[in-house]
Image (cartoon, rainbow, N blue to C red):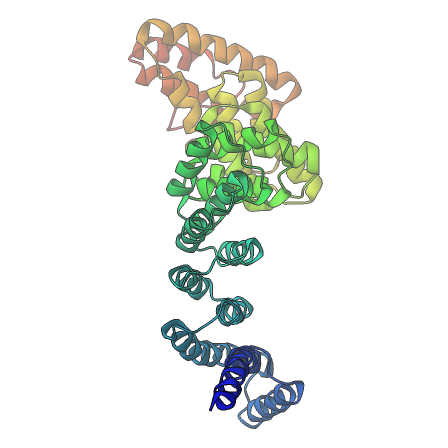
Length: 415
């Protein structure tokens, strides 16, 4: 009888070991099917796609997704049995955790870590680190936060820089720019340094896309101050976001970096948005730079491109340069209607006490510029100046200039 007990006690550990090894074997069979099985499945799917006239690549991708979903369902069944079984070992949980990591399921990895802790087992730093990386790859802020809690519960020191970077990346990648920026500001306020370049990049892109260009510019400057070199796509995203939302400071910062540091080739749309920004900010230097680069890039210039430059020069009250730009447009048979010079009329519509002096000054600049750029001085340009003087309430002064100015060009009905 005692011999029988000894035999029973010696057999029990073997049965337990076999049970644990069976868990690992089952998980391996699910997540790592044999090469023969994979080849046969691929051949079958490709054959079915050919027979049905479908794209083989798309069909294989769809089948791989279905295979992954079926593997997750089978692994869920094993996980439930392991979690319910009080005799499950740490290696059983580890096998299941490794399976979920292979299949790329961050939420299930978190559940396994929580079940391990409830069962009295501590996850290793490697397991927790792998789960955190998977959660970041999945761009899941919830799972990142939960893995962080598990790390703290297991007494593992959490690298604040890495953790904050992962949180910022995941939130920004999911277009939660406001929450990502809040995490960033909290980390910065606590004296932490976000060391991840992807974290800076994702945050700049998300903020610029959502119209928060001033915040995007702030984060970009912080990255440069921290000697973190952001990639060209980050600056391009900032430039395009600033162009869409007409943010001058952010656009000029991104434009300067792309053109002088990286030498990037911008698209015609990028240049056009930049001309609009320059016109709104009355920055003739920016407009002129964009026009030069458009010409060197071989883009055909049209009124749509050049009119913002003229508007920018007028807004900056750089009259001589504005009239030279106008002559260039005229040589291309552009700006030949009164609506093209609306910005000039608006700029000269001022208080009646200043209007007459301003109009005379602008006319003098026009006559001077016409010596080198004669196409600038014509009936349409003079009409635009007269219109500004009239709309300022100086009707008598406008009538006087109407008699005196039209010596070399004819008056028309608009005059």
